[in-house]
Structure formats: structure tokens, C-alpha cells
Image 1 (spheres, rainbow, N blue to C red):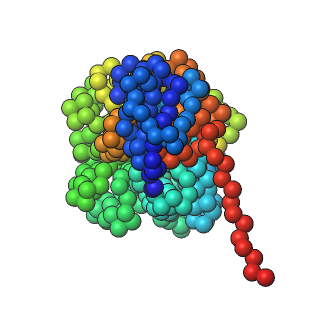
Image 2: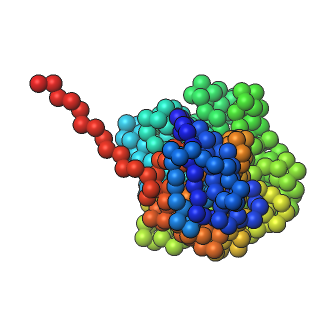
Image 3: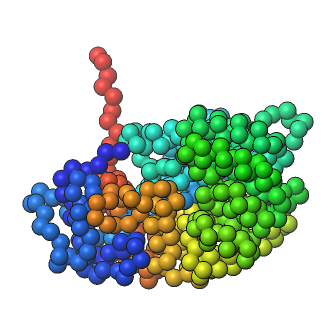
Length: 432
């Protein structure tokens, strides 16, 4: 991905640098050749050349680009589970994914970690984004996911005689687990996503208290992945599934919904981050009937919502880490609503906005393994910057509306927002 050349000065706004320090009023951000040279009070900013690009924050907020830590680029607002694996061919899924990547960037998300991706599309999306072929967030990839045969993601009955190769590897035992990871190694992913537990979405076979992988399978995934320098995460709602993941050596846990005291101790001891994806549960409860979700499923999501909120309060209070993001791409929880997760953690979970914003920037970068480059506005880091009209610390919900996004920069290049130049697609030359 190209970085900007020359200087850019962003001024006339307050600064949230993502580190957890107090906001700086009347601040300035100086960018030189795509990297941050200065972030602090405007009075102390170094002089910039006369030809420097100048961005007026209009009294709003200058902050790091947001990071979506559980991004399903290939989920295109599906309404049924089977929509994910048999409804669309890879060609159409790829086009949908490109649209979702552009939308995420326009919403202020300059980076994202894949939470699973059909057909290994995210590896090639990353390549296209890094080569400036399409706009989108910097991606950490995970490709196809791993679940046990008969587990949460293996919903096609045997009589259909079809596999799930586009979506997941269905494993039976440790040898299958190793084989699946080795296939992902060849695909070029960075994260291995697994399904140790079930979910409220499938109460008859694999509900949110069901274990779907054995510890031996989980350990085989971790050992093989770590040998190839890949990281491992997993969809973990059930209490024992969370603890199995932590004991097996997982590098992150998705959801960690029903964590107990022992699980919390394991989490803190290893300093493993959690990505909740909680607003998905709220959307499932509120809009479930609209999409014909059975009442039993809605009730399960309500239990998950309440249990998850309690767990995340405990994790933050104990000094644990949360990343923000989760499961956008369903009809009732569509792409573009990413920042609703942030608002929900303030309004429902009860976290303060500064904590939530830090989770959505600094912690997100740590989860991606790129905290040395992005996530905070500090000297020498890439200038991935979001400029917002208004004060998200006082009203975090303003991040939900793209109309409030003034500027989105990646490496100092202005990519989106109201101040971004409109791009025209050149007409092809016609040979006469």
C-alpha cells in the first residue's frame, strides 16, 4: 500500500491518540511521508512547508483509524446459514467482498482482522488492497475456518452429499486437524479460526453450551499453526470451551461469552485478548422475528447477550483486553453498522467511551500484531487516521453515521470521508 509523500497538517480539533492519555484540545497532527511526525498541542507543532496538505478538523476529533477485529468480508447480509456455502459462487462472493471492504474503509475502519472467509478470498483481498487495486482496510487474514464434523458450521445433512470446502474444513480427530492447518499454511493465512463451541443460532444440534471440538483437536491445531508461525483463535461461548482454548494455547478468543473465575484467571495469566461481537446478539434479539428466527433461537441470543455483557465487564475490571468487532454481514446485522458495537459497549455494557475507543484502536492493533505500526497516533507510526465531526467521547454513537466522517487516511493518503476527493473512473479509449 502506497504511503503519502510530503507533509500533511491536520488541525483545529481535539486529539485522541489511542494510548489512553487524556484528550488534547486545540491539537495538531503532522504527517511526513505517510508517517506521524508530531501529535500534540497545536502550539508545539513543527512548521510545515507552504505546499503541505492542510486538513481542517472543523472543531472535531483527530483519532487513530478504527480497527474491526472480527471481519467477515464474504458475508453479504445473509439471512440463513446455508446462504454462506451453497447460495453464491466464488466469483460473486469475491465481488461482494470487495464492496464490503470499501464500505469498511468509508466507515472509518483502516484495518481489520478476518474472522473467517469463504473460498480464501481474504488472502487475495489483502493482496489487492496492499497493491492499491481496491480500497479497503489493512487485513489480517484467516481464510477458511475449522470445525468438527457435525459441529456448528457443518449444517448440511449427509443426504445432500456435499462438502463445506468453500467455508470450512470439517475435521474428525487430530490428523484431520493438522491436515486442515497445513492446507491453510499453503493458502497463506495469518490466523487460524476454529469452532470449539456451538451457538444460539443452532439450538437443536450445537447450542451455546455445546462443545464442538475435543481438546486434543484444539491442541493439534495450535501446535501445527504455531510451528508455522500462525496464530489461532476460536468461536468460544461455552465455559469449558473457553478454558480448553486457553489451555491449548489459543492466541485470542472470540466471544468468551460464559467465562468463569478459572477461565478469567487463565485469560489474565496469558494476557489473551477477547473479541466479543456482542451487538450481534442484540440485533438478533431485536430483529430476529423480522427475519423469521425461531423464538428458541432468539431466547438463546438473549441469554448470550446477558452472559456476554457480564463477562466483558469482569474482563475489563480485572485488567483484561477486549478488541471491538463482530459478525457483521447478516441481514439483521449488516455491513456498515460496525460502530454500533462501540456504542453498545457504552450504552449496554457500561464501559466508558475512552475505554471502548482504546479497545477499537490500540488493542485492535495488538490483536493484528501490528501495534508497532498502527493503532495509536505516535511518532513514527503509519498515519492511519480518522477525522470526525463532533466528539465521540461525549457521544460515541456519532461514529455510526458516515456523514460524520470528515477524513480517513491510510499511510497519510486521504482515502475516504467528506473531505476526500471524488474519484472518477476513466473511460476506456476506443480505437477508431
